Length: 374
Image (tube, rainbow, N blue to C red; front, top):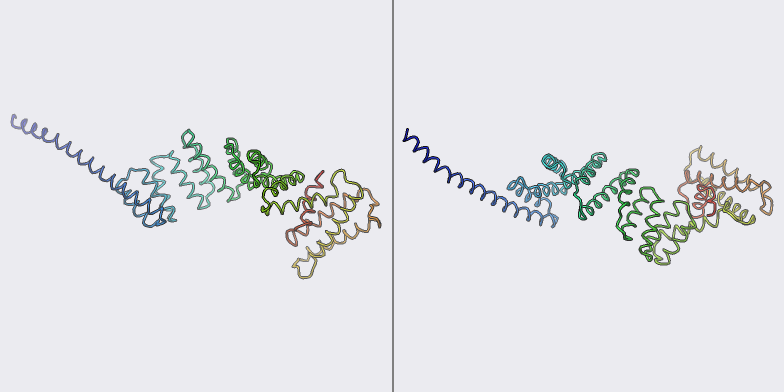
């Protein structure tokens, strides 16, 4: 018995240093693996910056094998797989990470980008929001959250999800940085999302913060134009072109705005002679547009041609209702004539292509039903 006890004591005494030796060796191995993994990681990052995704993938795989529990390496590997269009492998790697770190915003952001690239709006939206929800509080996180939400807005706009994009833009606008660039960026996105009124607000704020910002003024002019406020549009556009005559879009919009203001027969406070002059000019332009559409070389269907010919007859009838001095016998003729011009321009735009110049101005006047002061 004593002999067995003695042997047990000896074994126990020997096991203690063996245990510590084993722990030390294991720790040394982990440190070695971590060091080697770090070297492969840095090498992979350098290869990625050089544009060699294939070599970067191999280097980061080796880093991952050496240090499997390192989330930074695992995320980098998933990112380089995505960069190499190996979306299936990237998604699998990210989903494994998501199982162990379900609230990691970086993982959700990469999953969102993969879904976005695949056109899966629902899944992308889910992961973008998870990424936003996973961000911690603080100035740095706020900046990151703004960038992520801006990326989400652009994705939604690219996929014609205007209403969802507007919801995200309203969140961005609520705490937008007070500088002209930020407000101009929001304004352009609101415009793309179809909200010209909010776009105008942002462009006006941008121009208030930077009074020499020609592009913000041009944007305010465009937004005002889309709303139908042609008086304000002209003011903004003229000021923008004073600052920068090279803004071609602003120049085109200003030309159309001036045509609208000079051609509208239903504008307020017009002398009767001027009102009739504008109506006659509009009818003449409508007839010209119809004659161009009815040329034999224009490939119209039988129903299109019949409809345009009917409108041409109506224009002739309207013109015959005016006396030699251009005065209407019927007091309602101005309103009826303006509506006829609009119907002509609308039908012609559908059958013969988008209008330009005075035809575009007449079409927009009709859509605004005279504008009440354009």
